[in-house]
Length: 96
View 1 (cartoon, rainbow, N blue to C red):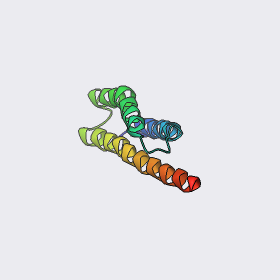
View 2: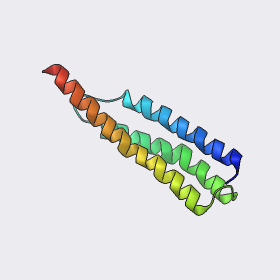
View 3: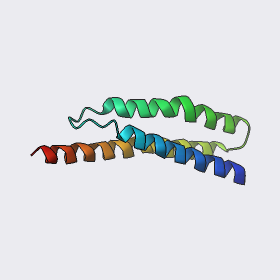
């Protein structure tokens, strides 16, 4: 992979982490946060996936590299799920 493509993917990871922090602020202490996860995944599907697909089509990424990057992105949905559940636990402890 070319160095400029590696930098671009690092920039995308940073953007993804910024989105994740933003979505974390949507957390509802009542535990109904599936919509947050859905919105986060949809944002990836709408913005990141087409971009990575284009990099693949233009041969800037191999099939393996594209899949590996998107797997990382989608793993962030589960990471956000874990973080949201911690927010729910912390909020419920405050109420006690």
